[in-house]
Length: 106
Length: 163
Image (cartoon, rainbow over all chains, first blue to last red):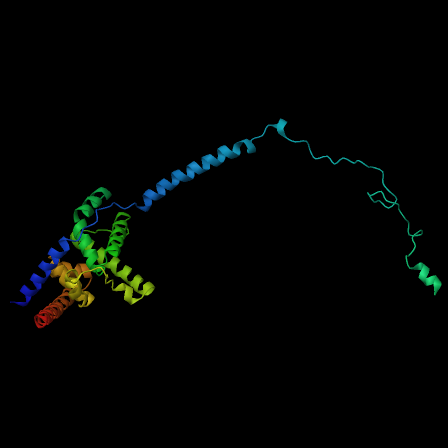
C-alpha cells in the first residue's frame, strides 16, 4: 500500500466517524450594530419616562410656590444677657463661688 | 459583498466551517462553537474583510484558524496546558482513534494534512489559509505524512500483538 493510500484511507475513515458527530445549526450572530440601534431605543424610552415622571415637579405654577420662609419671633423681648432662655439671671457682680465659704474659714 | 450575501455564504459553508473549527480546537466541541460564532461576528462586523484574492472558503478557513489559535492561546495561559488538551473522559476508544493520531502530530503538520486530505485543498490554498509559503506547506505535508504513517503502522503492530 502506498503512503498516500494509507493516509487517504485514514482520512476517509475520519470523515465517516465525523459524519456521526452532530453539527450545531447555523445561528446568525447579533452584531453590535444591531445591539447599538436597539440600545438607542432603550435610551430614548428611558429619557421619555424620566421626563414624564419629573415634569410635574419641574413645571410649577406661581400659585404653588410656597411663601418665603418667615421666622416668627415669639419672644422678641431680650434678656439682660441676650439669652433666649428665661432663667434667673445672675450678673458677674452677684455671682458667688461655691467654695467661697471654705476660703473664709481658712 | 453585502451582509445578506455574506450570511448566505456562511450558511452554505457552515458544516465544513464547523468541522474545521473543531479540528483547529483540538476536537473540543464547545470551543469550536464559540470560535465559529466569533468568526461570524468578525465577518459581519467587518473586522475580517473578504478581499476576493482567494476563494471565500479558503479565506473563511484562514479566519477560523487564526481565531481558534488565539482562543487556544488564551486557554493555555488561563487554564494551563492540561485543560488545553481537551481529552474528554466520555470519549470511547473507537471515537478517539482518529483524534489520537492527529493530536500526536505537530499543529502545522496536522493542519496541513487535514486541509489536504480531509478538506481536499490544494497546497496553494493551504499556504493562504496557514499564511506560510508553499515550500513550507510542502515540508509540513511530507513530514506529517511520514509521521502519521509511522503512527498508524505502530498502532497496527500493537493491535496485532494484543491479539
